[in-house]
Image (cartoon, rainbow, N blue to C red):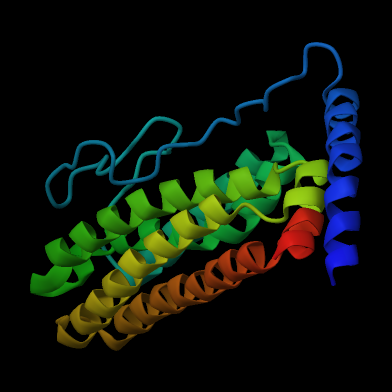
Length: 233
């Protein structure tokens, strides 16, 4: 065992030199830092108009959100939002596209919950409030997941996953878990048609599925310890 530890310590300087040379080669001249990707502000970060007024909740990079007056209109708004998000992804990097492809279903869910406020009866304003809080969490998890996706190969090989980013994801998941429970309670209390209630439930399920995916991602990042982690762990 002592002999293995000695060999491991002797190997460290060579691994560090290899790491530094690999990073320099990977970055190349003038490519030291990551390229920032534009992150669209989500619904709920703008101003809100009264019931029946066009507009609603908007933010930079987001289309105008209209409140639906019926379940069929709500379905049309959801389809339009999905199409818009698909178009947004065309100009993204591969890493960002992978992030948004997964998280877009939650962004659509937030959009839908805000659009259905007038269809939810007395709990409508409460649903919108939770949706805005959820949107803030979505923006945070998008930034964090982009950090994970953009982690370079050499760092991941030697040092493993991004444990700091994984911790950030877990903190956000703790908050969104409570929001989902609150949405379920509001779903049970809403004075709405069965069709609207089913659409409400569909958005909650999308949020839960994304919650599970992000939890698995965080766990995977923490378990990936890299060569150095397994050598001295």
